[in-house]
Image (cartoon, rainbow, N blue to C red; front, side, top):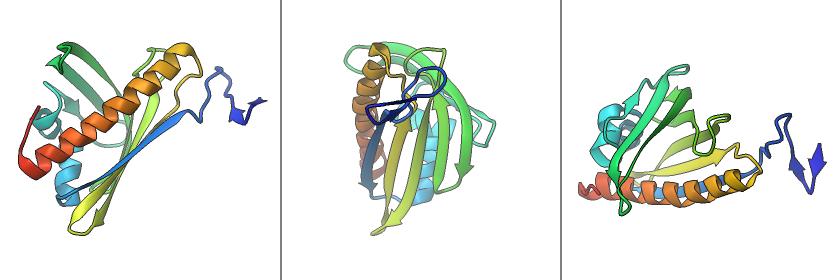
Length: 158
């Protein structure tokens, strides 16, 4: 079904609602990949008790405790779809409703002695809660990539 240029799938979700972020991090791709795809790597700068099985069919689980200025404690996770060290990592999680997952695709490209990190998240429902999740994830991933950059370049942790 076509509506205003959007392609609707059978569940009524607009598959082209997506977000994109990119940044240059002055660290080698292997180091960036490890910070994004290992439990120790994520816990060093972002989570509290993450678990990652970074292979297709494995699972990724994020856990935050007393996180950020609002002191949020929450968990989320899903399936790992692709893992090609140190260039490509794709997983799913549930930032909106448990009934559906969005897909997060991360690409790492060597550039000028560092790494361009490009992130795309797609599959948000075209509903009020889906659009709110898109907005939250857009700001959240921007913050996360900034925190990753500060950690890898300067050793700073939030």
